[in-house]
Length: 412
Image 1: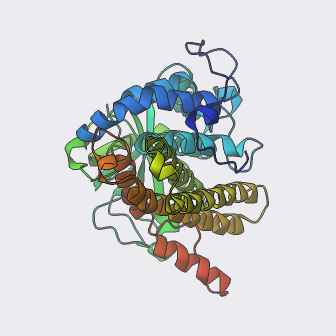
Image 2: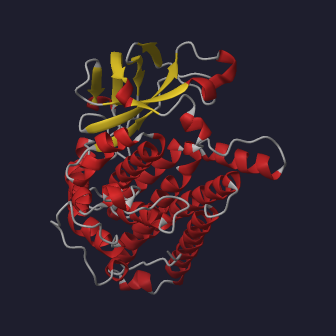
Image 3: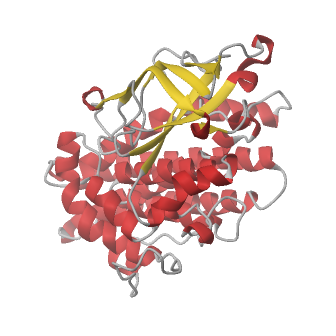
């Protein structure tokens, strides 16, 4: 994928389309990003205001993404997927899909990101039996996957989760409370991060971290959808999850203790956020250009021209940074790829913030009325970049440059 920045949605979409309604048993089609851009503009955009007002999961959007195969992007062709993962020949595809959707619905793009990251984790950490049980059915039916790691009051770098998993015959008993569980568990599966009771305390998180898969039919699993009420990213519904003495059978224990840490999974997810930030910036630019074209006097204003050019230049550089980071994962030096990805993440976030601040001034306050998408895109951006913590990103990159100890897998 190139770093080309298209500022005209119609041009960016291209001429071809992906037909809908294909048999789930048919061979997987080559993902068509042009068709995805058209789908987002035609179908997702009209729903966005109501979804924001309700802070609701974008189920119709996700159903349409599922039907067109976008929720299987990171799975191999044998499971009906696009075989798009970091390090593969198609590594860019799932990230460019996140970027395309984020131009219109950053919340839907985040749901897409979390789901594809989660099924990728099950693919690599899971057994063949787990592939058959959890992944193969995605050909036929929509099941949303989530990561359930965040906890109220959990300090960054903590040695253990507050959520515990106690071994018992045939599985584990899980107790805890989680939050920011994008996609939830009401319509699929959640990968819950726990700490094993009895694990070597000296080994810290790497020794005790255990992933388990929960589903809505399990006694003791409950979801609070009303808790999630931020000012932005309201479409990426991320509820609280309670786990009250949940019995998790061995069939739902994912990987060995420390699998997530050893696999440096958190570092693989930097570019999902990067693609979303870039897409938001491009969506802000695309809509703002269409708005400004209604006013010939603004188009002819050198001040407006200069600042639009500034935004275009920044977003082009950000797109190149994303491409460079994707390419870095083809090399064997994983920490280097993680650092390059963190730099791209910061670059795309800063370019998107520049677009929001600059184009907000150029378009004026009327453009921020709720009938238009600009205000929602700006709120989504300002909320989403808080999730990552860019001071920590910069500190990590700086520590590496100075030859000091660093952890490039951490989000914050």
